[in-house]
Length: 273
Length: 260
Ligand SMILES: Nc1ncnc2c1ncn2[C@@H]1O[C@H](COP(=O)(O)OP(=O)(O)OP(=O)(O)O)[C@@H](O)[C@H]1O
Ligand SMILES: [Mg+2]
Image 1 (cartoon, rainbow over the protein chains, first blue to last red):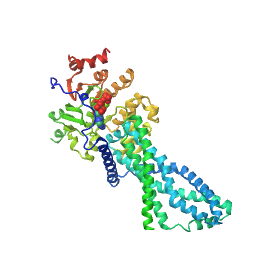
Image 2: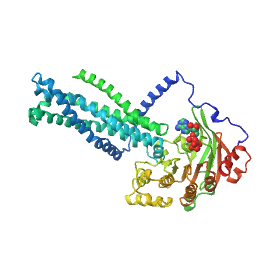
Image 3: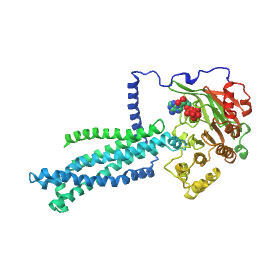
Image 4: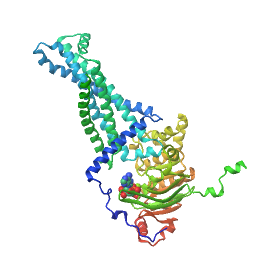
């Protein structure tokens, strides 16, 4: 034992990182961008590598999908109903209330269903993922998983991102269905249109491209919600406060990204239309 | 001849299960470990004492492969931990039980599910009944059979610690790493945990590294004591040997625990 030697105290050095290359802030920004890509890279690597966590994926799908179903359906029904009610006066000025079904269908299927579903889920599912993983991180549950020879990334992260990517499109379909139903209820009570006629009218102006674009949107939003929630949660720091911050930023960042993606996808889709 | 070769040779028995050789670790400019060396022999409990922030947790995280050392050798059960790939590391981890400072129970799962988790993940061939028996056995070992259907949030700190220990025992590890098993517990519960650590050593035939700054814990659970100070082991030996020392920092430690 080299007890005679005196070592410098670890506390005597200022805690922190090495000297910044550019500036401390720019360095941090580049590092965090790098971390995001490293995280996504790891996701795709682990995604295709067996063993697959089927049970956990199904459990997460249930958590994401089934538990948000009621909220999504309620919101959709009300949105459809209110949207139709609000649009009627301006159309009836031209005597064009017969256009209502197709107008509402275009609005719901092209724009509202993917966007509103994603925003609701960003709030509900994204915050939950951020908080759950964040608290698992700060209470060392993720480390505990690792030392009990389970790959926590695969078990926790891959399953959650897959679940949101699969379930947001499914929820979107429910949104579209219930939205149209809400709209039908209003149309039926005013114009006493039959259901078949309503559906016929509604899908008159909808083409395959519209549906396809919406599905792509929902897939992208689902992935975004899962990935942002997981990144924020998995990298949570500093105790309980870190958990709150992870949950909060998961929602804010994913909502922000969803709007940007919306804009990009619509632009791209318009090129093909 | 064949039977004889299966028995451990006299020299083999003395091979350390954990051998640390000049391990260095820094986080940025924060140098935590500066050349830590330690041998843990089969069936032995070594207590690592040290102030908060001296890198005790970092040390056992390096042993279990959760953190990479900057330099130095980390040999666990004959494998160089830093050289292992993911799969080999997983295999090794099955033989290491890690009891966390804050228990780290999965709070979305009941006690039963917590205990079953390592089994379900790593021993897929077990039947439901065999799993149940394994759970009952470790719960009995930690004396908490009645809590099987409770959730971690419904348990006291001491109970959680014990369930955490039970969860690591379920895979029948050869090495136990305890991170502050008695921190934040009252003296009576601490005594219970200390006895449990001894019992685990005898009943499950484990070797252990026990991290603590509680000298009662060190005295009752440790066969050997090592003091981590300034990033290396400052003193090492039996409890009496180490605390016969006149060095003021060692004294300060002793005085705080027993006279302060
Ligand atoms: N993942 C990490 N990243 C950066 N620094 C870390 C990390 N883990 C530990 N440290 C630093 O290493 C030092 C030692 O930490 P460690 O957790 O090992 O202390 P400890 O001896 O276990 O203390 P305590 O008794 O309070 O648990 C601390 O200064 C801590 O800030
Ligand atoms: Mg510690």
